[in-house]
Length: 229
Ligand code: FPP
Image 1 (cartoon, helix red, strand yellow):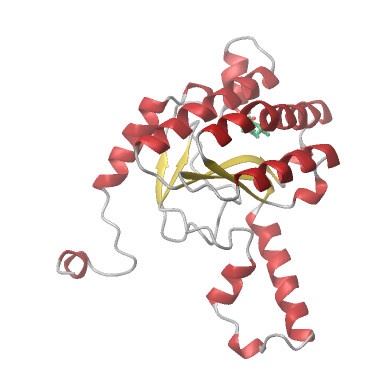
Image 2 (cartoon, helix red, strand yellow; image 1 turned 135 degrees about the horizontal axis):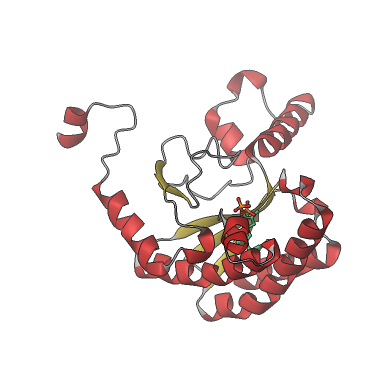
């Protein structure tokens, strides 16, 4: 969800105003996802590197997050949306964490759509935590190091139980992945738009999905192999 800061700056507003507007955009995109029959959507809300931003911005984002969980929680419940997170929540303010855990608990049986929020998330941090856990399993004799496969690793990632993304959208014109779902997005189709996140409407989201539908996914096979399948 990139471009909040630039969106605000171009309007002579404060960066946090861009984040606020960005938070409001989330429900549009969730509506679009439901209309398209999408079952999982993951949003990169706060990266493990975002802590290095000025303290005022980090504090404001944390406040916005706590407010958003409260404000949109009931909307998620109404729409039968399951709420999950990826990332290391231990660094979040305890009250925010409690609210997040409560929302996860009250939406755990829903399946219309699963919304995964990446909070204090970074692929490298996620991988380090997964490797540490696997190493401990090996030391404790629960796992034979020779049997470690991608399946073993993927079950230790924060996304365990969540399918790999088919489609990855980055707004604001930046063309990089910024430590986001690096392993899970191995075969994801990528989509970059210049639109800043606060301007990213449901209509543009649906247009992006329409483009996805035109893509040919080959997973390392040839085009002929795929077409004759
Ligand atoms: C990137 O834009 C955006 C973020 C770091 C935060 C995304 C947050 C929201 C959309 C609001 C919801 C927030 C939470 C925590 C639920 P940027 O600030 O890097 O924009 P810029 O590149 O234009 O400066």
